[in-house]
Length: 613
Image (cartoon, rainbow, N blue to C red; front, side, top):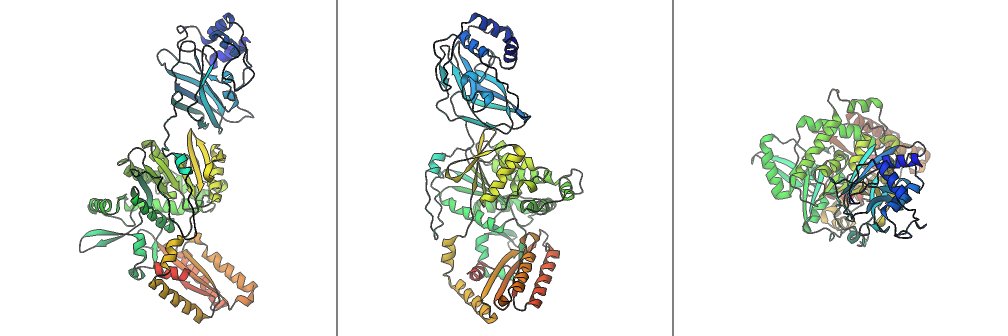
């Protein structure tokens, strides 16, 4: 009993402020004296009871704690443990005690009598503190409870359970006022959002944005703004145009038959569609341009984009942008597309003394530029949408500088499984940054499941289902929602555009061309000329199909559109792969004449839509 009292006294002192003056005795000696002087009391057997079986004095309460079996709070089965420091502001009366209890054994399984007692001091009152050890990776729910001098319990009844996820060796929690919900980053009323039901139809893609306040401001962070930039030599200034408008121009046919490399061009079109929210609130785009703007033109470009397009440009030096894009496309993109990297590739990309310097440090510094553009004009409660793997560090950088921001991160790319993702040396830094967002969205549930598996495997954070098909993670007391948000075709727009005269004319041209070739089965491919597109695999599959089923040799036609990609210097990328595709297509055409129509061009919207239809 004496050893048990020593352990309880040294690890979890029960001294409280306002109990007739604070004694200078050691906690263990004070408790022994109080227990010896107090009369035995009994607790009710019900763990949910709000009052003891009879009125008890403070000494009797201490006596019950001393007699109760002491729980060993060490980790189970050798699991890692996290030391958690609790701190709360609780106003008490003389004789009151403050406890923290929760859903784990170290916190008493919601029984305040077996919870962790908090201590205070005359110099720090009304702040109470306590220390507990919990298994790492556990999602913990807890509340503070005041045990009155008469034995009754005062719970935090006006708020939901407080939550945190135990990670690392130490974790400090500042929970603010007793029975007051701590201010969260997510300020939108979830009940108001989840109670809305959007009726979808095959021809209606209208999004109900009425839940967005009219005073809200949305910052859309994308590495490349959805703009087409040209330089007018006569006016000696840069001119801009929305990407969707340029896609309809006939002049596009005279431009180089390729585009600048981008992680996801269809993602840029999706980002541009957020302009429709401007009828409801303020939408500001933050991103870079597809060309290098000299310093003497940057002020003029910034003013024009802000006044005409509500865009904030982020400028990069040519060498910096080239290294950054090489890192994203050469290192990150293959990994996120399930390509297992070699150790040599990883070492070259992340070593500090490499030829090109530390590329990861460059990656973080570029992300910081986007965040600085947001923080300069940020107002409390603004929304921040960040897109794609070029900006994966923005959630933590925004959250550390604008704590009230409502952050959403959207992946327009896949997310790899843990076996591949763990090959990245900074895998934990990436996950921790993403978990600073309030919402993380993926194209499909498979990618979301991979992300959740990585969080469980690498950080020990488990998830639980939430309402409206969301999955919820608790990261250091911060609630993160994960959602599979499928991206489909804008059926209403496409249906309308199919009735345009220009599209109908292009349809007739394609129909006549296919009829002249005498093919009844048309297979269409529209891909970038890069290794991840898998064009060579498609050609091999076509050869296998025609070999196994000779009856289709005069029926099938593969229309393959390959789009060349250019870097910032205007040089063609992946030339070796382009040569391999061209050679393989020529071999297939010689073996099965008329089976393939290979086009290397960038099509405007009308011709592309007519081909698809």
